[in-house]
Amino acid sequence: MKIIKPNEVPAEPATSPLFTGEVSRQPILTPEMSPVFNLGIVNFPAGVRNKMHTHSSDQVLFVTAGTGIIATPTEQQEISVGDVVHISAEEHHWHGATQHSDFSHITLTAKGSTTKQLEP
Picture (cartoon, rainbow, N blue to C red):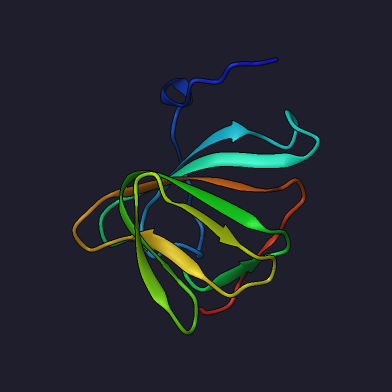
């Protein structure tokens, strides 16, 4: 057993063309630590999101701070602290902060899951 205190996990820049601005990531469970899961916190400043993408495994988002948006090609919904979002493998989606609020979520995917960006 291992207890991980997220406030003690340093944030690191998550530079990727997938994001529309600067975000940070706090790796909670890395592939080296877990044979099954990837788990991390992603922190979005107000107005920053990721681009339309898919994951090769299901993804679960646990909203931990602020107000965000989860969207597919056909719908868009606001999400806030306490919400849990299940995204099926290969489902086209994006998520991030609203224009007026920072936003953080814990993301859970299967170990080895890959992300494919769908727009430039």
